[in-house]
Amino acid sequence: MPTELEELVGFIASPNAQIRLLATENLVPFSASQPALFKTDDLTPIKHLKFLIRDHPKIAEHALTCLINLTAEKDVLEYVATDDRFLGILLELLVDPDEVNANLMAMLLANLTKWDGLKSLLDRKQPAPEKLGSDDRVINQLMDLFVKGADGTYNKHADYDYLAYVFADLSKHDEIRHYFVNRQDYDDVIPINKIKVFTEHKSDIRRKGVASIIKNAAFDIPSHPAFLDEDDVNILPYILLPIMGGEVYPEDEALEMLTDLQLLPPDKQRDPDSSNILTHIETLTLLTTTRAGRDLMRSISVYPIVRETHLRVNDEAVQDACERLVNVLMRDEADGEEIEGGAAAAAEEEDDIVEV
Image (cartoon, rainbow, N blue to C red):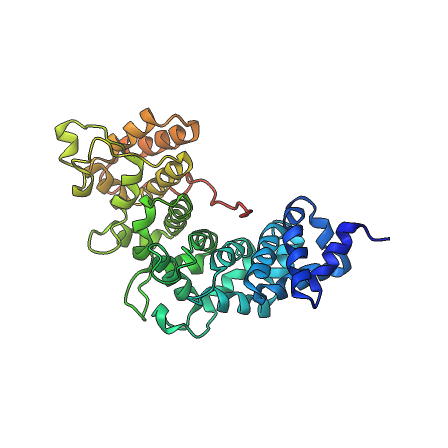
């Protein structure tokens, strides 16, 4: 005899919308605490949940929440992420400017990109809504959604913050790192220039995801000259500002700093999340891989900023990372000497599954 919960799972596929609503709503907590309930009959309940993302908005909301929780399970993740037809439906709904569950869809996509095969998004195409102003490449559409979601101008129901985690996971793949650092034909903009402004955004999710994207992209050593060029990506102010507070520097140090970093207000706050500070320090360390990167950081007084970060952030991992960076910046180098700078010192990219 099936248990009451097992019977409830069966009602997900009921032809009666009210029954589907009650079933999905009541199953949400069990999708996190008892995922095995949804793995019966070769994952048939998962199949039904996938179908429901196009149902009535409240039913779709509950179905999406269940799927977000359940894709923390490796077998469910593989089952959902390898369903190309479902992925097409999800992406089509996600870019709809009237989609009320777009944020949940972005969260689900953030889980699905844990599956390495989802790097295929780089080559995927679909028609773009006119309002989005993008081309037919899905990755460009997701980028434009993320940018426009920051101020709510595209979809009043969504901020698309969780796309930061989508890009953070995708940017672990070399070919997608290249995407972030290369100018796109449809708008003549380098994608990382669109997102770098979010390193000090009010959203914890945006800041964390964007910090990881920048760090992952910095593993692409040939792109470092563009990263450091003030007329190209000019990434350093966007990495350094989040790790700075309102501390006052001696005049000789302050005058050498980048203009954007001088005369900060006394109430300037560094990022409250020490893991973001760690990521930025690791990115700086990666950018010392080349002699040009090290020389530039020395010339613009990066060392005093790292010194103050080490002093004021009470986090052992941050302090260790600061010490590694300082060791690189403060060492003497003969003319023409090259050392292995940042790659070996940088930590692994993040791989946490998003859960609700």
